[in-house]
Image (cartoon, rainbow, N blue to C red; front, side, top):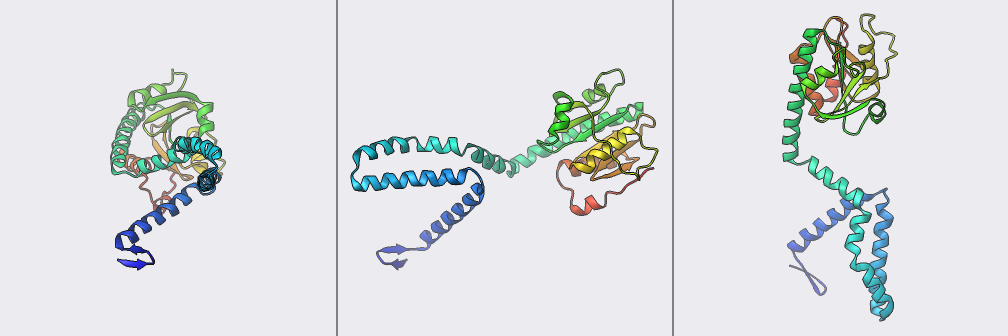
Length: 267
């Protein structure tokens, strides 16, 4: 124990002080720049005034402030609701269980898409499938036909059948859901694109130039499978290579070097 005036300050107190300091520091970083900062200071002022009027014996004001502080916890939850939700979401995303479930989810999506691509490639059914990050590409989704269905090979092959009204355009997938179909993507203006590539390939390249997406294209003429990402297009993909690219994208394992090494091909 270390005597500090009338206080005995030991190792346990030092650890507790350090934990509280770190918590306050990260709380400040968490709410910095948001509406929560002035609201937080407002709550502190209310408690400080309440303590002051208690000392001064101002009973009426003290009674009013006590009624306010009685619902303080509920008020804090309401005021900081967006920040609390964001914190809990981030905590949930970083848990081991979340990663296990996310891995199982992505494996299921990959299997279903691979099965659909194999069927459409053999039948030479044109297809355009976009894997978007969470809460992105709202404008394209809104302009398409909302689907909101679990990813399945049967649904994908049905959508891209020529006699269905949704076959033209792209399907957009987020997580394990097909969120929209018949979405029209921006066409790439890259003058170096091979003339052998049609509208689907140019659209796949166009959206990959402006968004962090992975796009799968099945050629209607040849059944050839292509993948667009980061403004590059690879054609003539094998199923094994396609699975590898999907696993990298969906599990966020792709590094900067892999992005640079994603080469162009017109084969």
